[in-house]
Amino acid sequence: MTSTKRQDVLGVVMRRMGLALIVVCVVCLGGTAISLGTSAVRQRILGLLSSPRGYSVGDRIDLAPAVYQASPLTVVLFARASCQACRAAGPFLSGLVTAAHRHMARLVFASTSEAVGDRAFGISLGVAEGDFISGTTALTRLKGVPTILVIDRTGVVQFVLEGAPATPEAGTAFLQAIESVLRHSDSGSAAGDGSLHAPHDADAVQG
Image 1 (tube, rainbow, N blue to C red):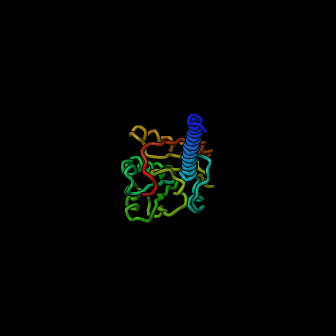
Image 2: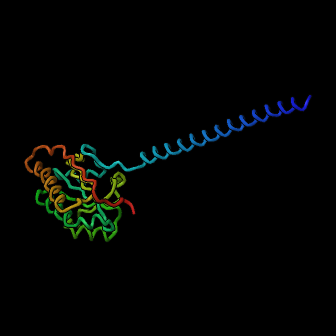
């Protein structure tokens, strides 16, 4: 074989090897991209599945029937003493307790633990000694605290407020909305849909 032919053959071999190397690189990069994309999608799905979905009007609350069966409407306040948003909303929450008592509705304070600080915080708001509950599975559904629910005697949610009002004016508006729901109970009529959500300042349920 002449020198020229050997060079031609060598050139063909080198080009083929180069092409093969390019194909391998493309396949590897494509596989990595697909793997990363699949991982991101998987993490996104798992995140959505594990995120608390909160309560909506019409849901049935995860509390023992004894908590709500004795009253036409029960106000459930989920809060904790270590929650900065809860403490900042103290005047609003005190107004909530007063409104519930004025309309003869039961109000219960549900906390994440039996911490003495949580009980003291609730009492400072006007919650009665016998109206504290803790360790309920309802807490696992919350997006954060404070959360306020109004439920009927069958345990069905009539009103939802997630988070603390951002301003005193907003707090006044929310209290008026809650009292409107409670007044329906006073008159013996249906409470309505009460679909008011307020995703303002809130702390995570845990921590």
